[in-house]
Image (tube, rainbow, N blue to C red; front, side, top):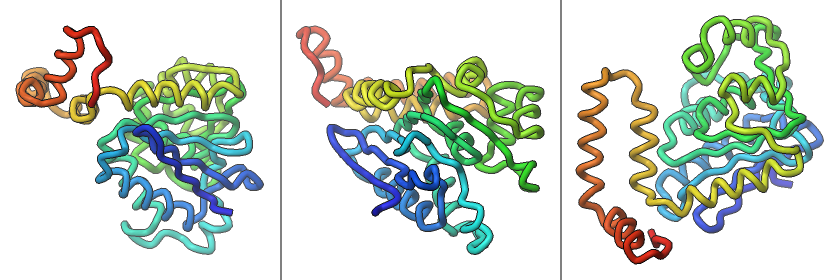
Length: 250
């Protein structure tokens, strides 16, 4: 049975963690499949949005520790680092539907997603220090920027599980749904995103992630993209559809 499932329809690539007997713990082979899927999606114009889900009641229990001990990452091109590089540089919207356990990378990967929806019973955790490890996926940078130093220190230094309410209160999750509704609700959001103009979507995501510039520099970058988009075919279609009172076709 394939431990990473991919399905593509209507502009949405759904990537499913499919190792339910191990709470979808990730092996080196699974990381390779994830990296392959993300790298292929980046150059596939038919993919507008990527949705992550987990089978069997868990999102992912994080790294399979035995596999990690047997196959420790040795360089930047090993599967785990290929996956982290791919998810952190993805130009298309990433949506996550989280149910059950989201441990380690199961939580840090959410910091690279654009929209995150969690089930009421979700349990997230960052137990790196407890395993004598350190944070990964740039979480030591992204998490304090998102939730502040003290909250980030609490999550990363203590490594204790936190619930859906905390994830939403901290801004790690957008919304909470009943566990059985998380994937359907996330799919509805993905469908909304997939119907929007793709270049404008990618450029807006790029602008959102461009946080190093000052206000003037950011306005200049926004203006450059705005002027370019104003001349684009998809902008003409969006405005024409608005005036014609019909759904746009991108």
